[in-house]
Image 1 (tube, helix red, strand yellow):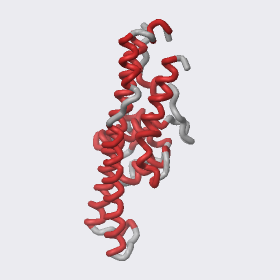
Image 2 (tube, one colour; image 1 turned 45 degrees about the vertical axis):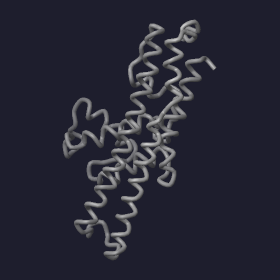
Image 3 (cartoon, helix red, strand yellow; image 1 turned 180 degrees about the vertical axis):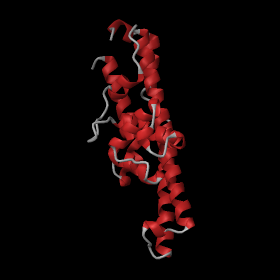
Image 4 (cartoon, helix red, strand yellow; image 1 turned 90 degrees about the vertical axis):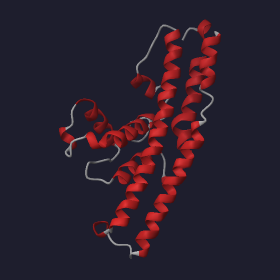
Length: 204
């Protein structure tokens, strides 16, 4: 990175954006909604005698679908933060005459999970799964082009076509942190990453 460029007002203004992530509080609220939905589902299962998965009644199925929807919305919000971050960083690189595409930035200064994927790649893939899963073939092995790439990523963290929506998204959550720590997701996936990127851009 050109050190003279870093000193310019345009770059400093862009870099300053990396230190502010107001969406974090909204994501934490979404985590709370997912947790409450999970509690309602668990309470319902207890009321009907904790039957095995095959014997859930319709309310149990619907409540668990609601859990999955809240988790999916959480990942979509995280994806929005990731997309914004990539845009900020790329605009800085463009000013330096060195534009980058999305994939390298997703791994730049990123924390890598046990799956070998960065936290940002996991959250981004989980959001894409939530948004596009209805477009995918029942047999994921038959997927083509862009969906195939996402399927390859989510399969690495345990997702499968036979799982419930919530189960698959819990796999994504578990690849980053445990359920009890879900409210830390904005920090783990976006805020810490932004601080590292800002330091890199400053040449610290």
